[in-house]
Length: 187
Image (cartoon, rainbow, N blue to C red; front, top):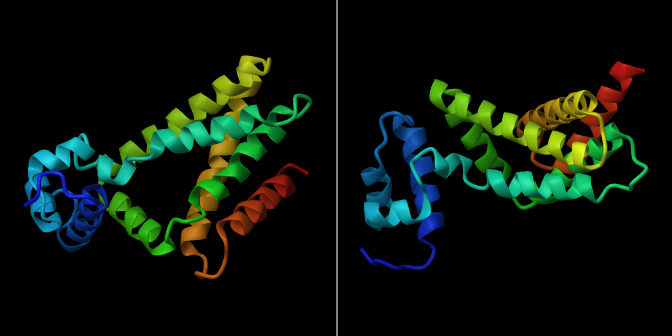
């Protein structure tokens, strides 16, 4: 096993997802993931803090991407329009994500209470970040919280719809359709 082999993080992700699907998250060890990827457990920990992070790595980058999109919204945009800009920007972030990978990840998370809890924490962190970005734009805290919660709810539903959609339906189309459904609810 090479200590500094290129592509180790990608191989570790693939190995982990295969093992989670075969054995379940709880019955898979870091040592097994590393062995399947052809690296040492020490190499695993250079790339991931723990085996959950194989599934949740990148959350911070997504959060940064959405906050930047919200901050870039026109200064006169309403709080909900700014949040909508952020939700729409998630399509760019996920454009190259293979849908089958997203489906596998979702299935692993759905099968494990600890992972469902971690997903909720991830969504709460995203909500907090968007609300903070809205407050930075001068939005009153209660309104910022409501807009951020709503936006993250739309994002979550859109992502779930995208996973369930046929493979030829782009994520951006699903997000726009979900935003239209939301608008119809408030009309």
